[in-house]
Length: 401
Ligand SMILES: Cc1ncc(COP(=O)(O)O)c(C=O)c1O
Image 1 (cartoon, rainbow, N blue to C red):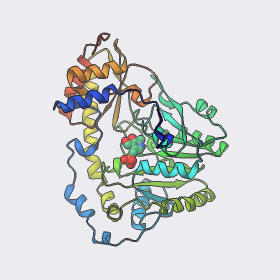
Image 2 (image 1 turned 45 degrees about the vertical axis):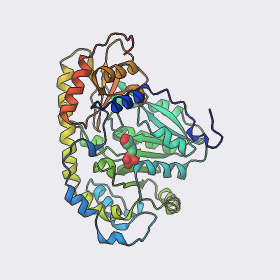
Image 3 (image 1 turned 90 degrees about the horizontal axis):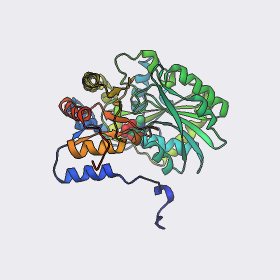
Image 4 (image 1 turned 180 degrees about the vertical axis):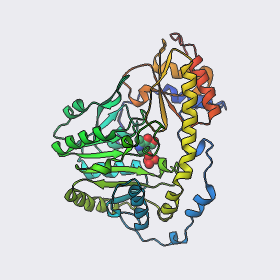
């Protein structure tokens, strides 16, 4: 029921969350869980170059406040150099710093959409995106990403285009997607660019997991949408995933596309960001040194992802009722499971009986049962124990859990 004090932004039909209640109960009982949903990289035992990170954040220059709505030039230049190293030319003037990618979404929805306008978002996809839109008074309309055993994941472009209405302002693409791991790839990006130009829409391309391709993914598939932007394109990224440092709080928006559009959106973005000036000065001064640590940090994450992926392939390959969907990148794995349990009953039983936590596919809006989503970041011993329970669990229809 609506509380008259508060805005309608908080009124959504959240299903009663039995899983969250059970997690809270287990935690209150002091039970250690095999948490295969953990994707906070700072809590999975990675070996960070701590001294170098902390030294970078301790620059004396951070004692002076010289706000710039776009963010400090030195930070933007370092980010431009990150793209230049991939052969992509982005001017530091087309980069806008935010405190996080989530904040970047909020800024872009304010920039592009009036209340009740629409943005198209991928499903399955990042569960918080719909809420981020809602908090800006914008309506998120889901477009389907489809799985085919022969062709892998693809965006259903026909359906996407059919969903465009006069109120549609932007198409959000997540590349690689969370949790499917599918990169949009050059062909899909070119088609989306054509659709966006045809309908006068902006593209928002979230590349937060772009630096985490699986070993077999061709480099061409992972190329940033900035490389060939014709439509007004906003590419999002940040240190949360790129450097596995969600707590340092730096994200950015890189603007691409036709020069006039880049210019006119830039002046508006600058005005908008000037009202908030969110990114902290210490992290902005630290940005060049932190980016220089990228390879060291990413090597840690890559080796964790690869070890858990290998383990998962072996363990799932040894049973006939589970399949691991191939994935091109990112931090997650999607498993298909044939059993008599529904998705919710499966995750509840796994937690109740085996103290193992996974996400049901419905959490990511998979439109079918039999899907489990796992983070590939947990320590391998936790991961192995959890998968052991998952694949050995009694999958008979539930009577209680
Ligand atoms: C696809 C995607 N985009 C954005 C974010 C949020 O990133 P940030 O921590 O920079 O807000 C996440 C977080 O998990 C994500 O999965």
